[in-house]
Length: 120
Image 1: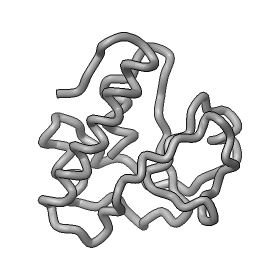
Image 2 (image 1 turned 45 degrees about the vertical axis):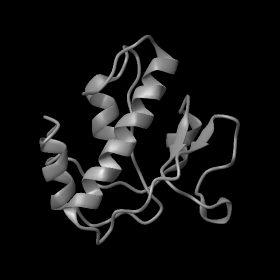
Image 3 (image 1 turned 180 degrees about the vertical axis):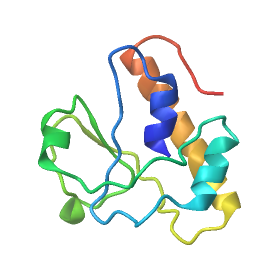
């Protein structure tokens, strides 16, 4: 969700890549549905595992919810943990709530990066 939401409104020169330590086999169909409600189609997205180049080339690393012992990246100054609840196995109502939390966080991030561009 975060990758699709950020990239839909990313300031010029910025692009998000989302990955996990244990990626699912496919994008959750309920996630695809709640993203379409925001006008964002992620149905062609693929899940990805974290790779070294991702954090080596990153300006910022945003963790959705990760304990220090289980994170796949070093805790550099550019790492932020948003502490978003895992949506696996959750009903669509909770997935929408999580999406909206991510939208709020991304709006703050976008404002930090460049101006007042927001997601509705």
